[in-house]
Structures are given as C-alpha cells and as structure tokens.
Amino acid sequence: DIQLTQSPSSLSASIGDRVTISCQASQYITKSFNWYQQKPGKAPKLLIYDASNLETGVPSRFSGRGSGTDFTLTISSLQPEDSATYYCQQYDNLPPTFGGGTKVDIK
Amino acid sequence: QVQLQESGPGLVKPSETLSLTCNVSGVSMTGYHWSWIRQAPGKELDWIGYIDYSGNTNYNPSLKSRLTFSIDTSKNQFSLKLSSVTAADSAVYYCARGGGKRQIGVLDSWGHGTLITVSS
Image (cartoon, rainbow over all chains, first blue to last red; front, side, top):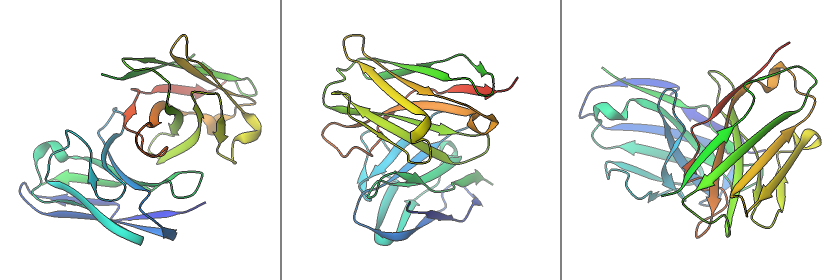
C-alpha cells in the first residue's frame, strides 16, 4: 500500500493567513490524488481532485498542486469556516489510501 | 442532487456479521462505483472497497476474507457484510460515490455516516 504522510498534523492560523498543508507519498503517484475537508461529526467533502482540479462549488481560495511524491493544499486566505481537518488521498494504486490528517484551527 | 444514506444496527456483538446498506437517491447508480470507507474514533479514513453498477467488486486486501458487497440497482442501494467482527471494526462507516466521468477514487458524494460499535 502507498503510505501518505501529512504535515503538519495540526496548525493554528489567523483569518486571512495563507496556509499550506503537505502530503508526501511513499511511492511515485501520477495525478491520482485528492484532498478532502472534514468538519467534526460530518462526512468528508471533496475539495481538489486529480491533484489540482477544484471541485465544483469549492471556493477558489483552495488550490492543490504537486506530482510524484510531494503534494500540497493551499488556502490563500484563511476564513472562519475553513476550521476543519484536511485529508489527502491517493488512488494511483489500489487500495486507495488516506493521509493521517491535518487539523486547522483559527487563532 | 445525489444523496446517500447509510443504515445499520449501531451495535454488533463480537464474532457476528455486520450488515450495512446505503440508499442512493437523486441519481442512477449506472456508470458509477460505490465505495465503503470507515473511520475509527479519532483516526484517519480507511477505504474498505467498492462495487460497481454491474456488481464487480474490489476489496481492501486487509479485509477481503471477511467482506461481501452487493448491489441492487432497481432499489438504488448497495450493501456491505463484514463477518467475524471484533472491537477493531468499531468505526463510523461511510458510503460514497466515485467514478462516472471521473476516476473511481474521486469520491465526490458521501453519506453522513453511521456509527458501528462492536461490543458484547
């Protein structure tokens, strides 16, 4: 299985800050890579698919990039509603695997 | 608008079989892959497997020997059976949709999740 290591595991930032979350894969991945947002007690929500494509309805302050083994999710200007845990996911190889999550708090 | 809703027993005894159903509304099941994912309390997401509209399955190897998926497109639902459960199977279980015009692993719609506790 491909292991995904997210960093940091948690962060605290202020409204308007630029926030970047990293995800490193244990093996090379093409572009079969997604990012999800999960709020407490809720199901995950797809934010970014195929590494850099913004899901319909997701605010443009979210962006994704990367290839190979290193991927990032960036929130360009953090908003109060962005307080959540973010997960990366690969599906280049079966089984699809998820990262350990990054919890984003608002200062 | 696609909606998914899991249903299950809530509590299952050790060594018994867990049965879950996911009801799908707002979309035909044809052309998509239907996944199960679980999340133990405070833990990361764990992909269990998927079934497509034709009944083809792909299971996580770590659970394969205990898993059975089924699908009934006439009822717009799909189901999971996990046998010989232990406390390690306690988790929130989600159903989700993938595929269609995108890759199988792009899970664009999820159910709210159902909490399953394995305990005597």
